[in-house]
Image (cartoon, rainbow, N blue to C red):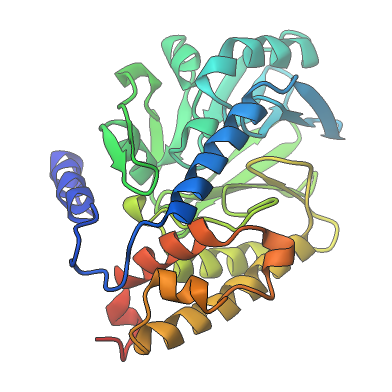
Length: 328
């Protein structure tokens, strides 16, 4: 792991290196109209989610799931305050913090977690950071939020957050804190959806918050521009399966609480898809060839349109080609 400014310089070089160049290190990769449509479809879905009314679902006496903030937020209440796991989108932050106060009797927010750098999890960082509230995240997440970041598969540049909105308490492996009767155990999940993904597990209430690690209603995306890839996403999903049990409420980035069975279904799909990707890559096939060959056909009924999943997974696998073996 590169410390300080050296890591920031390295990130800029790395991210510049994955901008698509025709005929470059990603054989057979072309941005199709279907790929673009999938990308814009996600944007429309995110906009619709941002307009939803805030609602609270009580998971236990001390744990509340808040929906409608642009991304799921979990509030853990103790005698003296509240810890938030994820922070919704920027445009909902004022409403979210008021809603949290209404739901918890006006208790102050004592800390907030970001499960990755994506904006549906970091929106309230700005007002909370201004007030000195600790922001907890993996160190990689802080580095992404501290720099302008171009994500080529979205054709979008995310602007760096203000200094006060950056994570102020970062870690590399794992940690824990206690809020009232709840113990919050959190840990890094490696290179998965991004390379800054974390989970937060509340064993007392048997609630596992996983953010974008578990997809709902669409294929999961491994964001290769910030260290994600298909193999790591499968490994991280298996880690979460081993942590959960049949009664665990699993809180993803959006939607209602899910279960260990949903994690298992995602792991089974990812494992099968990795095998198929590698086989077709060894045959010299590109992403559009794979889509034409209906590589995902037996999973589309559950996971939906595969274009974005195939395009991003293919790119990420090429960044790990030495690990896959036998591909030239």
